[in-house]
Image 1 (cartoon, helix red, strand yellow):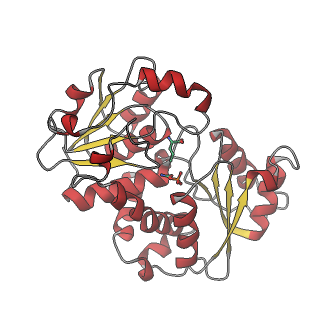
Image 2 (cartoon, protein in one colour):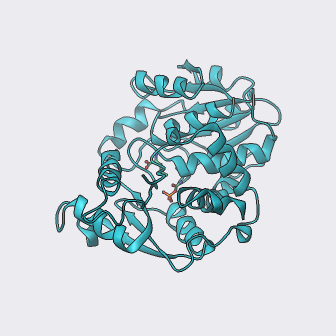
Length: 313
Ligand code: CP
Ligand code: NVA
């Protein structure tokens, strides 16, 4: 069976720690575990950071990335998903995909773990580059960023303000594994679901849920936000902008946080909605560091899924 990364729950605390440790070293120190091998990068949604960092991560490991957009592949239109996974598994050492539905990744894993169509491509790992449920590569880059800011994350307070979405879910699981104190403030109907709370509890975290953003942010070390309108939610944009009014991370909100607090955003940002320009580009913003950290984090993830030896670099 391949080592997949569909969500943070696929990692033990030891895995997460070793991925972060390897990601802290210069990317050039990684063993070229993908030398002479291909990596399929399938995107059903747009991307700036994830596409660029994943392509460069593959190259850093000696591999050759092949980027494909959903339209040209025609998942379920030109060809059945399972057939696409079988064929990509025959060419590539790893399949990385940004998908509309998380289930798409699970179906890829199922057909590859079953041995594709001839049993020869059964060890091809699948990496989630964002689904409706999860964004694990982002969460790993985020934990790298928090560690760089504070060293040991244990006991540090992370306050997430806004939509309890895919980014939130992976972030909170990873932060729970790092021993952080977890808070979330969202408008009614857009907060964590019971299964999110259970998922986070399963990683050792106890999520404190607030309705007032100021209460969640009080004394926090890390304030994190993401778009109010994720890809796929565009038809709800007008309603969401009204519902989320008052949840903008701005300078006034920042005053309530710890003095050395950092502000995080996975990007892309929407100034004047979930965050102000002043905060995003201010001295406490870690957003650009997070974006830069996507490269070492993803390099480390790819080394991990293709074999732990890659981490010895
Ligand atoms: N944060 C992130 O995943 O950015 P992209 O959508 O640009 O890849
Ligand atoms: N929650 C956002 C994250 C984009 C990186 C989305 O799914 O569109």
